[in-house]
Picture 1 (cartoon, one colour):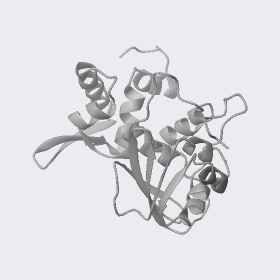
Picture 2: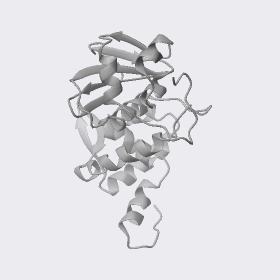
Picture 3: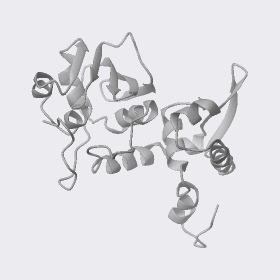
Picture 4: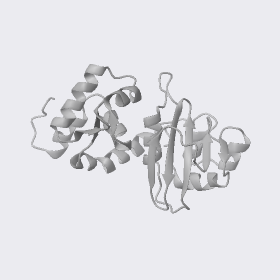
Length: 217
């Protein structure tokens, strides 16, 4: 870990968070505690030895801690690391302003989709519901509270509403839900009336500089 040689809180934070893959590891741990292999599978681009190094660095910084669960080592954010939660959420919101159509080599993961639900939760009050969301190969689910949300990776067969389709990004950017469904850009199953609540609960606006996502009507 390289020092910037400056007595500055931001410089100290950048020493840790500026290392390649560190923010992505923290994003996945923000969603929930994970075993090493779960982190490795959720971040397919990171070599195992580099993941080991980054976890060791984050532990040394007091941001990540290890514990035993069912005889397996799991990694989680420490109390100090949980203080990064609002920072990571705001960074995700900031980055999503230019996140339109994916680049050719970009695919969503279960963890990144769960994090997207976490970062795009608005402060609008809605009636509570549960939702499973699919984006390409990624699946995540959420329990949406009146003024908050709990997210997790993977499917939830007991969810009240199931939402997916190529127009999901456009819907989050503020697209009309009924039009997106009518055009086939967004699919919905279960309690279809909750699609309106979903569109109110989650919003990730796009800057004018970002290109319109496919089927983002």
